[in-house]
Length: 157
Image (cartoon, rainbow, N blue to C red; front, side, top):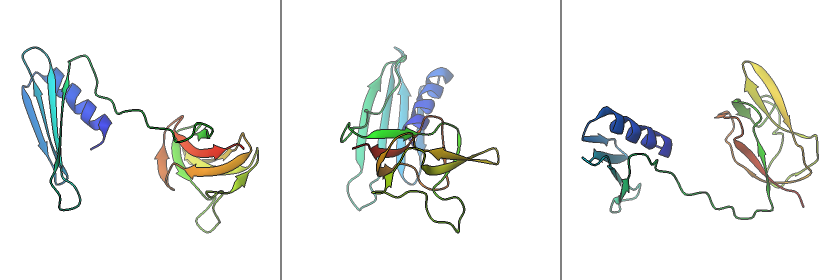
């Protein structure tokens, strides 16, 4: 269960007027309790993949606040992020039998095709707007992407 799903569950429980909701799966347990003052307590028990003790996280959230993840730490701010201009499905190659457009460590020039994004049965080539070296590919092949979602990290130097 990702953070957005947990946030939506907290909102749902708060609006529904129930005092407690418990959700258990093979991977985790989560309990959401609402108090008489409008505060919400979330307790999550996550089972580790290794035979270790489970990790327990507990946090207190006031009604109008939303639990948010900490901002990701950027290793080096000198990299430029290439983002998706449209919603669709991300592909790293023009067709299954063709080679990849780009790989990590490859130098690219302005105008080079980095990937294609399929939207409504149309394949849109995403071209580089900068010259540099691909540092990291942030999306898996054949994955859905959102507008403005980071796709690549490029070192412009």
